[in-house]
Amino acid sequence: MSTAQVLLGLLAAGPQHGYELKRAHDERLPRTKPLGYGQVYATLGRLTRDGLVTPVGQDRDGGPDRTSYALTDAGRAALDSWLEAVEPPAPYVSSALFAKATVALLVVGADRTREYLVAERQAHTVRLRELTRVKTDATASLAEIIAADFAIVHLDADLRWLQTTLERVSDWHREVRP
View 1 (cartoon, rainbow, N blue to C red):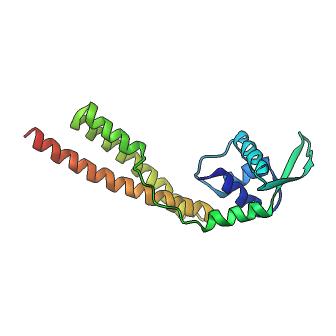
View 2: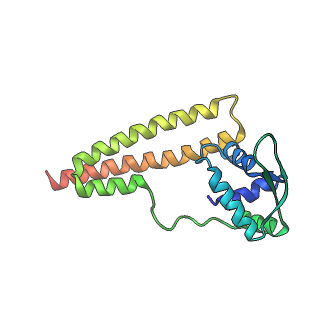
């Protein structure tokens, strides 16, 4: 996820200050890592420097000065370009789960690797159940439901990979140690 593009998208609704952008991000992109205020303001600084947003006013609502930012025409064009671009599939396998299983095979052998994989499968199953409950919650927002759908599909892929890997490790173990 590109924080800059997401902030541009949130600013498309109208001028906002950093606190509002952080809250909007965390509310509208549920189940993603929350943004830190420092990250928001650093990104706004870069977007301002690049001419994609501009400060449009300040207010002091019982606290420090808060600068509101608005999307510029260049910012709107950058946002449109980002939205229209097709995201290419990842060219490399980059998963902590994959790396852990591979290293475990190298370091601790098949028996302990199977134990790790079974524990991972159990944790994934618990998380899958939690997310399924989100989808049936009548108070869940559309954003929460599509975030749950996204996570469920990825968990399902991980679970299928875990099962296949468990079978392969077991088969390999039987061939190496009859």
